[in-house]
Image (cartoon, rainbow, N blue to C red; front, side, top):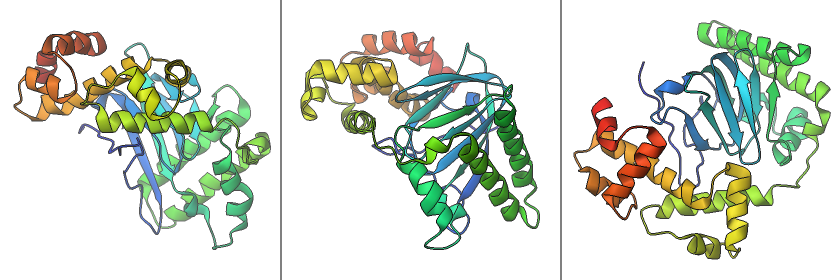
Length: 296
C-alpha cells in the first residue's frame, strides 16, 4: 500500500478535498503505519468525521482531551476540532473513516435539519467529539452502522448515495436522542483553542527561525506562563518541545526526497546545530536521521 500524506495548511487546516461539491462525502481505510510519522498529525477541518476502529488501538487527541480507542470502538469528531490520532504501544491501528461536509444532508437552502441540528452542533465549542464504546448498546449500534456504511461505500452500487445519507442521518439521530445537549449552541471554552491554533500557525510560518518562548508569547500579547499553560493543557507538551518536534516532522520529507546533507537539513528546519538535531531526532523517532533516510 502507498504511504499516506495529509495536506495541511499553515493554520493546520486540512486541505484535502473530500468527495465532490455535488456529493461531499469520502470514505477511507486508514492504516496509521502508512503515514510518514506513523500517526495522523494535528489538523482540523470544517467537515464532520465518523471513525470506526477495525484493529489495534490508538490514542485520540484533541486540544482539550485524550482517550483510548480500541478495536470495536467508534468516534465522532465535530467540525473545526483540532485533533490527532496516535497508535498505542507501537501497535498499528486500522480504521474506517468517513469525512463529509454538512451540506451532504442539506435538502434545501433553508433546510430544517441544517438549522435545527447541524449548525447548532457545529457552533457548540464545548462538544468536540464523542467516543462510541463497543460494550454500550446504543454506542455499539453506531459502530455497527459505520461498518455497514463502509460496506455500502465500497460497493458504490445504484442507490449508494441514498444509503450513505440514510446511515449518516441514523448516526445523527442516535446522537440527538442520547446526547441532545450536543445540539445546543454553547460557545464557552473556545477562545483558548482558537488562540492555540493561532500560535500553531505562527510556528508553522516561522519554525525555521530562532523562535523563543518569549517571542511566541509576546506575539499574542500573553505571558510566557500563559503560553506554556495552553500548550501543556491542550497538547500535553511545552511550547518549545512542540516546536522542536514540529521541526523534526518538517525534516522528514527532506530526508526522504532530497539529496541535502543532514547538516543542511538541520539548519533548514531551524536547528542551531546538526548534532542537536541528530540527538533530538533520535529521541523522537528512536533512530538517527541517516538510519531514517536509509529506510525510506
